[in-house]
Image 1 (cartoon, one colour):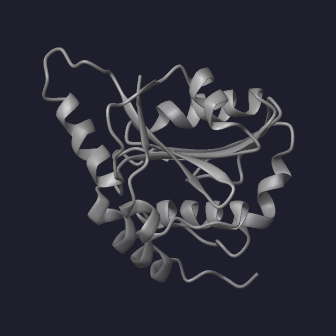
Image 2: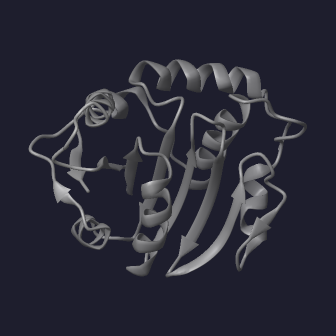
Length: 197
């Protein structure tokens, strides 16, 4: 695989995600071969009163910080995209960790990543209840899990030191390669099922 022009990819992902408010802190989990109702059950979430776009989600999430006694602690989106269920969580690591573990407990596969505004981030893949690989986005060669080489083909071409902003874009590129599906403007702009924790 050729060396990736990560700067061009960063600009593309930045232009796609920033208008929706999800560039600076984000958790994404891709779940496959798991039923939506089962996933909702194992995550322990409750339906939000209305469907939300990603931009709506970010607005509701921001308002939670401004309320002394909010009705919910957390809110996430679950939406279908080309055979996968995609979890978007503005709270960074909550759904990445819970979603990866709990989705696979139902016999499925989950691939997730998160990063925070402080620049911390991790990626993980699990299947059938087994953690296959987990690693820091800044140090992708230092991996843990039962099949650490499973990530290697998707990391090819990402060489050299990556700056803040570049490794987020690289991580999203790895997700696109791994799942075979990219997040689109149409998906981000559409309304999806929302749930509260």
